[in-house]
Image (cartoon, rainbow, N blue to C red; front, side, top):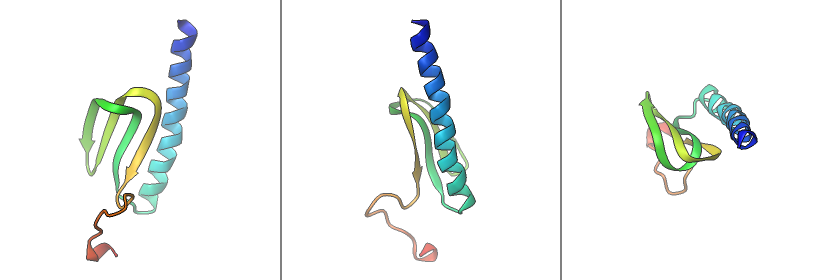
Length: 81
């Protein structure tokens, strides 16, 4: 049990560092970041700070950074084209 907990903790730290790299570069390049999530699935804890929603989700084996304009069909205002 102890090694499973250690594995999940170390994996969580690695995922955080990896996703933070995406987040930081997006911010430095002027891309709006809509979500920064550790984990997948339903939100366990979340807080919106500025334009970004920070989440810890139910399944801790991954993470993602959702950037503005990433989805096809998402409208981009004329002022930003």
